[in-house]
Structures are given as structure tokens and as C-alpha cells.
Image (cartoon, rainbow, N blue to C red):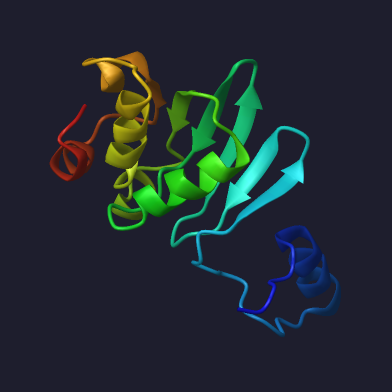
Length: 136
């Protein structure tokens, strides 16, 4: 597999030149460190992971079919527990992978009430969220 261009370098090049000479929406579950304590996992819906003290805050969980890949990639970057899962919005491709985050927390000993212990931040709990994740 060829080595992909770092997302910041790629976005700078596309913004500066106006030319997208390689894929810009990569769905390969690669994890990239953007800055100290800040990483980015490429997926159908990307996930941004931020070190927040002794834990992680994750922005978007990706989709149901890709959430586990996002968590696995995130774990190559940090083993800290996830304390917050922030949804940018309630579309299935941004919230559907939530179950993978809950499973990861449970596997790390977070207990039976993992979902409720992990703070979820979103606009509202929609019928879509409940239907897709079984949680809300």
C-alpha cells in the first residue's frame, strides 16, 4: 500500500492550488496526529479525537459498519478511556458507530452502564439515534 499524504499537507495543497490530485475523502481508517493531543481517523465519517486530561473526547463515531475500525485506529494512537462522544449532527454516518465506542469501554472494564457513564453531546436525542444505536 502506498503511503498517503498527511491530511494537513493534502488540505493545504488543495486549498492553495484548487486542485485535488489525490483522493481527499479517504475511508481507510488511518489515524493521523494533527497536533499534540489531537488526532484524526479517516473513515466514511471521520472522527476527531482530542486528549482531554486523562481521557479522550471523540467527535463523531462514524457509521455502524465503520465504528469498530475507527475505534481500532484510535487505539493505535491512545489507550486512554473515552469520556465524551460528541456528535456534530445526528446522521447515521456520524452516530451509527457509537456501539463500537461503548463496546471498547466495556472491554476496558467500564462496567454495565458504560453508555450512560460516557457523556454524549448532541443537539437532541432523535428517533434516528434510538433506532440506529438502541441507546438514548
